[in-house]
Image (cartoon, rainbow, N blue to C red; front, side, top):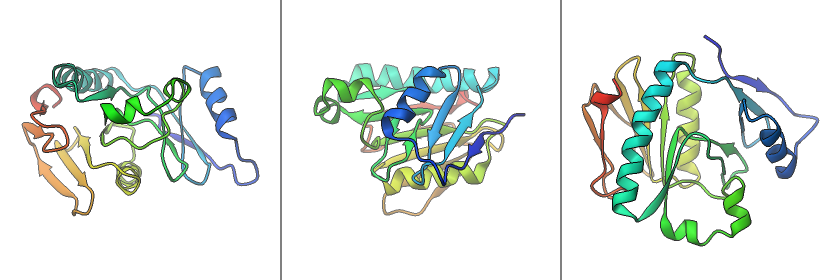
Length: 191
């Protein structure tokens, strides 16, 4: 198992343009940047995690196409959060009006906003505490609903603004509640 690799950049900070170009020049790697400007390099996932992620994206994508109230993103999509961090959740969704308010240039780069909905899927090499911290960061920056799916424990942590974290053991489905009305994620395809 290869864990994410963190690079401290205390004496040298990349501009947004430099960070974007670094990501473009190294498309085989997945980079994130925390609010301090430190970079994380995530290795590609294994086959099992990739397949699980596909099943999540399929379900979210189908719902998004049918519902037509927003735009969904896979793990390749980057977001520049209000706190300055650059994050790439495994799946994300924003309302259509947020998308339409972005300029063409903003749509071509890391989106300058925090998704309303995010999913992080824990792979065997992921540090749970790091993912939990990332989920908190999403909520603190505007995410209304987030799911941390942990297949190793068959648990889901549900994050909502202004609410305590809810932990579900071996749920079979998850509801998008009022953020994603009528969206149901079938976890039988994920476990």
